[in-house]
Amino acid sequence: MNKDLLRMDNLSKDEILDILNLADQLKYEKKHGIEHPLLKGKSLGMIFEKSSTRTRVSFEVGMYELGGNPLFLSSKDLQIGRGEPIQDTARVLSRYLDGIMIRTFSQKGIEILAEASSIPIINGLTDDEHPCQILADLMTIREKKLILDGLKVAYIGDGNNMCNSLIVGCLTLGMHISIANPQGYKPPKYYIDKGNELALKNNVSFTMTNLPKDAVKDADVVITDVWASMGQESEAQKRMIAFKGYQVNKELMSLAKDDALVLHCLPAHREEEITEEILEAHADEIFEEAENRLHAQKAILVKLLSK
Ligand code: CP
Ligand code: NVA
Image (cartoon, rainbow, N blue to C red):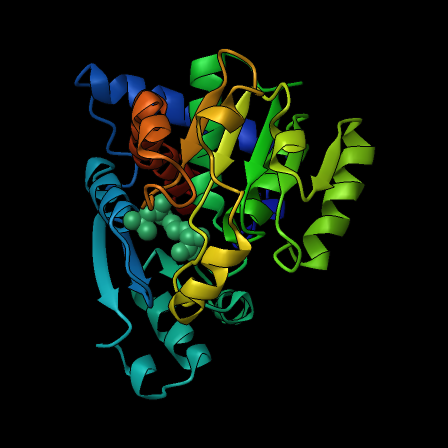
């Protein structure tokens, strides 16, 4: 296993399955009141340069439940906010902490941090990737469908961090994925190339279209995300126009399999990327997905920090 979890392709198929199996076990133990202080005495720094509800609370509670100590570090209060080089921050924090989870903008920035740190760095969301979310999504799909191999996932919306990590995660595990993005909002070339390479290697399909109806046809799982991500607030109006027709609604869902799941990483913008009706009809899996952030992240923490 890599020292860090910076991007979905840091994990092999077996490593993803190991994390999902451990996450299932930790979820079972928690539900049955069995304590698992696997990270007793370990400290995790959590640096946030963007807002968060789920990631912050699930990592913080997850560390407590593993017997460890989480430290919330707002970038506004750290010296990096005043210009201290990221490399110096990394070298100092490596001497205090056992791991760092960071939510930030640039993927390059997190890679520089990882390079300069001797401790594991976990990506809690960048502009390019959201691997912790995708592990929770895969856990939820397997919990509900009992298998992953051969399922068809459809992603409707922006070619953003969620879409990128999802492409890599699904294709690595032998799932088919079809994505529908408007012109100009496709994933970066790196992820399209990576998707084509993984599809060929694992004998599964990776398709891209401008037509949401084609993407969701016979899908087992339909996933969407906001049209304007954190940091893109000024583009919200322009995006609202570009994404018209990309809403996950009843009409679109009628083309997926009858028992298709709907997932959304949340926060959701009702009547934009998803209707209230569909969100509420699939609240069971969407809020299980949110809960599973806790269990999946505990598994990631155990795998990376207990080495
Ligand atoms: N899904 C997710 O990452 O939620 P937060 O932004 O609340 O952490
Ligand atoms: N794509 C969204 C995900 C939020 C969890 C964003 O980056 O804001």
